[in-house]
Image (cartoon, rainbow, N blue to C red; front, side):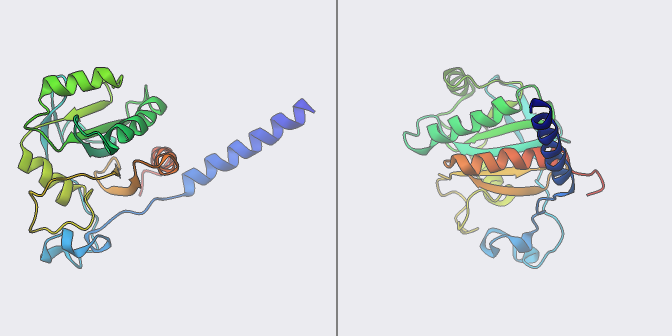
Length: 214
């Protein structure tokens, strides 16, 4: 009986692995996104959207930029340390992503503060200690507010429905964004929903198994 069960489990695992290798997540283009988020010149673009260059400081004062994360799978979100509502939920759910890929050098988490005038490097470091956030693969980022907000709205498109003419409006979003090794957006998820976070984790595994030719 145990022998038959082992064979059955092996067959199921093989099928799931094969499916993940053949399954491809969408590659988002400007035409897939709300036209209000993008420049008029990009409205009808069918080319993939690539994450722009960036440079911020993490909770240890280390510069984290686009060159450093090149070739990595990124799980991205926005928060602030004094948020009493959804941010603790987002952090705890993102921690599940951290723990799933704890020793995986292919996967990084980038959590940007939307309140950089308060969330200094020292404040972010204290927040990281509070939530057992490990700096090896999870960076809490701060920096120039206008650059953070520009990246949120026109880089990662994490804030749905916002007008491009109101780039400085305060950001408070539950969205997690998944970026592949080529800096292309591959998924959006509700970070307050455990089922959505599970889907994101599954999609990260799918990206890890994706054929290089994509």
